[in-house]
Length: 407
Ligand SMILES: [Fe+2]
Ligand SMILES: [Fe+2]
Image (cartoon, protein in one colour):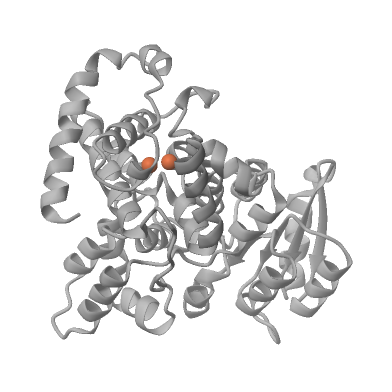
């Protein structure tokens, strides 16, 4: 079946340009072009679109208003912004309603790759209700403590980007948002930033203030109760897996990008679990019940209740937000890396090992569940089986440290 894409821009010349540029995709893509928000919504009412690519500054309904409405009317449509650099304020406002930003002028190859990648990621999740849930997510709520610390720091007269960065890098949701923004085409950096603290310092205090205090792109987690599992514990688990994966990458003398990738992939590997727990706490409670009463494996219990697993949900969201392959892969395959076809990144290997070791040590997070075993054939195939005793020792030290730090 052809994939359908809707392009929205108030300038006819931009729409004409897109039409010319993408003519050769007509065989595989169904494309529609709208001159404004009202026309776009009428088209969406009449037929379903897989992706919408909208301009930001438009008379009448602006891009943010349009995408927010699309999010309600057609929740599984993936939402991209293609806009000029002058639209900064509007862009910040739209960070909740937009999955990815592209900047004008946009090369055909970049536009096509971004859209094709979104289609590939869509196929990760089979269940429509889960797709709707995930495309709907604006932010991953933050732990109240960390959220309040960031707000207090930003309001303080001696606020420091460094301290803000340190707090942000302890929080999964805030890290995801600053990295998403810094790495978006809109921000225009040539290199990829993988370190949340560095992302915060690149944004700078003024932007961070307007994002956090005015636009409120971060939100505080509500006290949702999931029987048998605590969100705080899952946070510490994720942070520890991130730190362990980072340390393993350093031990392997990997370059800075790979070390940062390993940290980020570890920090976000269980993002899907946070999404499911925060949005459907009762159902996640049923998952935990199946595990404790029927000794079901975590993935089987999740499949039973949601018809999808936290691995798929997390990978899908990270992909939608434009995170790179190492991070998306680690989320998708951290429990069974051998299921990842093609060339796997080293981040996946580090996260897989770190996750198993941290879970076995029962420090936090996945301790309520039966720890998943190491994927031994995979580790042998990629040539790291011999390093395991040393890796275990490294992770154990970090976990002991983490417990002491309260992190
Ligand atoms: Fe997991
Ligand atoms: Fe995990």
